[in-house]
Image 1 (tube, each protein chain N blue to C red):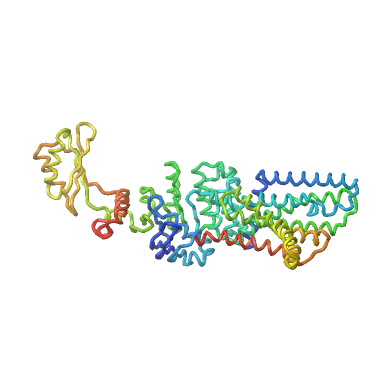
Image 2 (cartoon, each protein chain N blue to C red):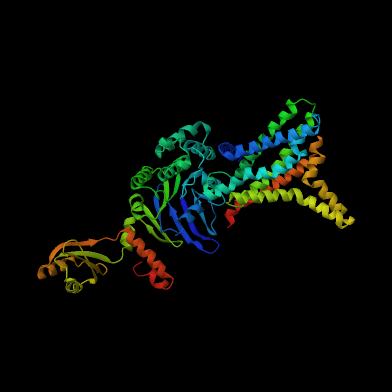
Length: 249
Length: 328
């Protein structure tokens, strides 16, 4: 199971690097990060000591980009296999459905992690005196949130043979995950104080909040980590089920 | 080696397989024959574990295809109908990926990939992208993949479709080379192919197995009425009169005529069960002074049998009782 997942992850990573989309996305991220840094440097008159987690969640750029980037990486994964029929070759080889899903997920997650590595240059190379612990924690937060977005994307891809549909479905899903709790909080705020309990819960567990109160402050809160991981696991589980569903038609 | 018992498969609106049962013994080469849409691919996909049966059970090498799917997949080399390949992978790269997936030990991988490429004759395109391959090469890359793990069972879905005649011969030769070593089930809608390679033929139509036997058996059992060809020179213009005379010969049930080159006419006589009117026809021709150029028995080819069976089951819906008895 593990070895076939690794085989599949390897293959997916290789094919990512032979497709133009990976380079397009990398360019976008690098340019975006550079621009964010430039703006920040201007805004703070060059006082960069508080740059810490600018790139991993404190900057708007991350929240704008991540929910859209992830689906671009995942849209192909199952949709393309279904469209071209290669899924038949894959699923008649001695590999489990779970290994296929895990392998594909591991490949895009690794690539996603790689995308944010160059941002470390800003902390390590540009001087200032950033708290590297906080940066690392923010980086971890960004990866965990990214994993969730990727899992949603993978799930969307497993439901269709159309890449465009897979990508747009995943973008909608990711944005819903991000904004529906916030929207609910806003609405509840207006409706009645009686809903304060529910509101507190939503505030605590909206993905923005999870990032803001813990990872970005350098706190590795096991609750937040487990929360993000289990949401990710849930979507991966749904993906495995969808892939399996061919067996029940 | 392959055992299918009472398998039924329903898709949303249609019944693709209807109570299908058959066996393939170890080392046998069995042709799976049927028109497009007969249920060949569905049956094959159930055997390879890609989709499950609605009812019934199937086993390969003693393992249930649904419950022990991974064990079954380890023992099958499968060539799907349209040979889906990852377009962005090179042939060799693809085969190495497949070798890893198929759990070939790292030490053997390189050798196995080389051997499979050699056997399927794709060594010369090893550096080509799969997306740039011609139909024939794709097919052969698929074959190389099926042979990769040296599986005891090969299941090939239309291995020769889309190939030119030369490539077809190559593929047939390859299958014949594997004779004895492996159990092979391959589907086709082209009869001569199946006839020349297979020891046994399964005819499937509308989701049901209609016949199961050696090609010769099937011809004998299902050949139906014998037919004889009588060619007479100088008969142009006198067809009616000659046909009338031929119809009078004992044992002849029907006569059809068609002009042939020159001024000849070919008459095809249908004879009743076991009847051989050739001698009587010769005497008649001698008595009337006809220039007899050909007088021969025509054996039905598998193709005709196939067409007949297919047509008959078409009518079966309205007359179920008569179709199953009689000459079918």
